[in-house]
Structures are given as C-alpha cells and as structure tokens.
Length: 205
Length: 294
Image 1 (spheres, each protein chain N blue to C red):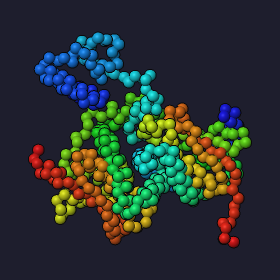
Image 2 (cartoon, rainbow over the protein chains, first blue to last red):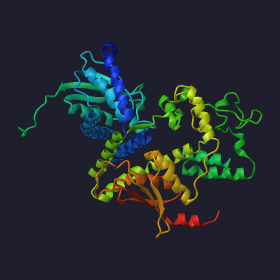
Image 3 (cartoon, rainbow over the protein chains, first blue to last red):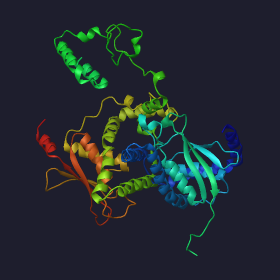
Image 4 (cartoon, rainbow over the protein chains, first blue to last red):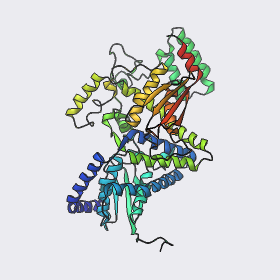
C-alpha cells in the first residue's frame, strides 16, 4: 500500500497539467451548469432510505449492504449518461486518467466533493478514493449492532461500479474503511478486472 | 430534586421492585428533609471539577457556577467530531447537485414500488420515510431561526477573518450566536407560515407559492407549490410521489403539537402543469385549542 502511494505521487507529476485543468473544468461545471439542492436534505433522505432497508431486512446488514449496492448500480448505469452529456469528456486512455476524472469531475459535479486518489497498485489498475467528507453520512452515528457489518455509504460503490461498467471498465468496487466504523479514514477501493469489448448485443446484427 | 430522581429512574431502568423506595424518597423530599443532600449528587454543572471538590454535594455556593468542558479523552473521535461540528448552515457544505438527489429519490420510489402491492401502500411508505425527517427538521430549523440578525453579523464578522467556516468550534457554534430561542409557534397560522416560509426555503430554496385556507372546512389549509422540486423528473402517473414531502410536513406539524393529516393533490393550472397542492387537515383538538383565548 505504501509503495503504491509513492507511485501515485510519481504519476501525479506526469499528469499534473491535465489534473489541474480537470479540476478547473469540474469546478466550472459545478458552478455554472448544475442545478443544486440542499445537501442536508440529501443526507436526511439517504438516512431514511438506509433505516427503511434496515427495517425491511430485519437488521440483516449483509443484505442491506447488497441492496444498497444494487440500488447504486441502477443509479450508476443511468448516471453515466448524465455525466457524459454534461462534461462531453472523451474516453480515458488509462486508469490514472479515469481516477482523475472520477475524483475531480464526477464527485465534484454530483456531490460537490473531491476525494483523494491514493494507494495505487503496482500495475496501475487498482486505486483508492479517500473521502475526507461524505455528504451521505453527515450527522450519522451507527447503532451498536450495525457498526461491524453495515457499510453505510455502500450505494456509492454501486454507483461507481455501474457507471464504470457502462464505459467498458469491469471493476470491483468496495469499501475498505469507513470513519463510521471507527476507522481513520473512509476509503473506497476500485480494482480493474478487465476492459470489456464493444460488442453488438446478441440479435442486433 | 424531584426532577433529579426522575432522571435517575429513567436512565437506569429501575425495576418495578425498587419503585416503592423511590417514591418513599420523593415523599421525604416533600417534607423538606432533603435526604438526598447527604449523598453525592452528580450535577452536570460540577461533574468535571469533582476531583477538586471531592466530598461536596452538588453546587458549591462558595465557588459559584462553574464552566464545564467536555472530557475529551473519553470521547470517541467520531462522536466528538459529530457533536462538536457546528450546526450553522454556513459551516457546512451547502449543496449537492439536484441530479444526484433525483437519482436517489428515484431509487427510493422504486424501492417502495417493488415492495408494495397497491398504490396506497407505495404512498404510505414514502409518507412514512418523510415523516421521520419532520421532527428533526423542526428542531434544526427552529434553532437556526433563532439566530438574530445582529448575532449572526457578529458571527460572520469573526469567521470572515478565519479560514472559512472551519475556525474554532466555539466561535462557529450555532448556540453561541443565539441569545434567546425563538418563541414556539402556538397558533395555526404561525406554524403554517413557518412551513410555508423557512421550511420550504430550506428544502426547495424558495418559499411556497401560496398558502390558502379552505372556505368550506374549518380545519383545512393548503400549501401550494407550482413546481415541485423533488418530483420534477417523475412523469404524471397514478402514484403521488410528493407523499414524501407530505410526510415531512406532517412530521413537522405533529412534532409542533399540531396533529394533522397531509395529502398531496396534483392540480395543474394554465401556466403550471405540475402544480401540487398540499392539503393539511388538522385534527379536531387543534381547532378546539385555537378557539381558546390566551
């Protein structure tokens, strides 16, 4: 992990010029092209969804995690459309670029946060997003029975998974740490499995 | 003293068998013999200084009132961050994108749709989820409305010199800028204006478009919204997704002791084809109370 972060530092030098412009680009879209809504209402609404799920599944938090992921996946497959329409960004040539776009544009445009990209794997195909702040989990304190099992913001993983899959990147996305569970940071791991081929769906020839 | 005993009963879940004992003590306190004074009282105002004033009982008049600070070593870091974070709206991230909200809202609706058998059940689910937000918002917004113009100017004069809203936790604390809490809304009209004004502004960034009293029925009022923000991307259908907002409003009114039922009705008009009317039906007791002179 620590070796990975050294790599990330080296790579960020290479892409520093594009990184900067991406940041400005994301800020620009957020400021001028985005309709906004109260973040606390967003937080509270998500809270009521999670608590509803906890009740529905009789506090089986493994199932709640899965359901949140599935909901996120549904969102992600449609959110990518919105994202591309808004940004008109071209295809990313590698995962480093992808990570920058995710953190500086996608998170900025939708949630108004910019997570740090760190912990690169040696082959540059897996990285972590560190969320210093998380609009989903403001005000939240997990009850005793949920602390060990529930990934409160698991919907984010689903969104990332769904959105990346729609741009032909088959990834594993999962939470490694969450401050709600008493960890030092909130960390989402994204690991590229393979690049999917553009294929015509069966029966469409 | 009596209050203190009650607090102990509540906190420690005394079993039924110990109850007579407690009642006995209550009787004694009534006799002005203060039996509790001989024991050590854990008083919130002196609990920190306990080591220095060991053996004393509660408030020490020779020292006077003491300022207490939370014991930071014992706090769990998350809880500390959570409870020390300012509630001031300007100290927080103000906004997220509306499409992020719309996606989330859509998932909430489809969750309700997939787990329900009828339209009523769907609306009830959304209503219930909104209702949970009501009491929380009531308290938060009341608190924020209590900040007077002068105190908030003082607050921002200070934070303008510091780095954004992340200065000292004490300086940015919302409570420190409140000198007196806003008076609780007692009249139907007052609480309705609170919903129509601050609540609507908080949720949707603007006031409600109209506040109407029914001419036919005494207990019915209507808040009109020409362009509902949350459901703007949802097509016209037989499910009224504004039930979520109904739930929030009902939660707020119930929390403020104005029990009522709130329902949403789509009533398109010439210019506003998405216009929604939130019908608020107060319970009978509210009108009875309203008729009292005080």
